[in-house]
Image 1 (cartoon, rainbow, N blue to C red):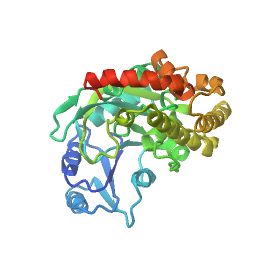
Image 2: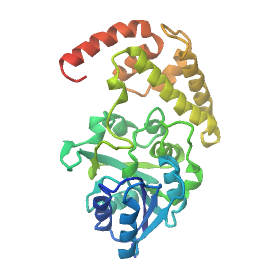
Image 3: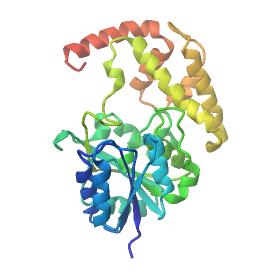
Image 4: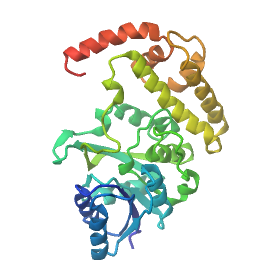
Length: 330
């Protein structure tokens, strides 16, 4: 008999696309599922739509939150409802291809993995293709290929998209509670990282989700740093992100092996130092190297200059910005 798989779906003001998403989950080739939905105090007709589906299909359970939890805590609530051995994460505005659950579960079994994640097709509101590969578009594909089964994959930044995840309940004790110190360490980032420290990750390059982009995406494909025309703003953002990430790691140090605990603290101290170094920094270069040594050489050099030699970086940034602007890429 097929295992029952729990599919977790958080909702908030999702009336515009929620029917398409639920239909795509219910009409999977793999039918033995429990669709667990938590509505986070929607102000539109989302909850009414969910209740109608719940009446029609006994595989659906809908929870109605009494106060707004926010995205991370709503996912945490859903993770606590997992009853079966295998669970998946879902967004409210995408569309799953019919074989998504079946193929992902096959991969989990075949690879004896603890977590499977994959690629996505980026589409617009009308489900028209914007880019055939999310991971290529975001320039994550090479890193995923090289580090897909090591903690380095999800350590410096997130390479795992939550709505592609299938994982095992046994890891939830280590994962929960989800950290809330930084808005940059979201649920998928944390789940992927914690499992990668001791478990096995497996990657599917196939695209089984139409990843819809619209005006209300919680997380999308926009790169915030591309909006800036001054290096200082880019640098401030990079430092803010890394302080959030390593601050979260330090706060949850018991989750990490001792060598990483030490590196996490060094990294946090290094980025705190950088906040007060506006023109140049000659300290902590060894820590920078430990963090970035697995990145490609161009990314390494760019970040080294931005972080440690911003006086030089400003000139290079303006030249690059002007070129990209002429090419209409900024």
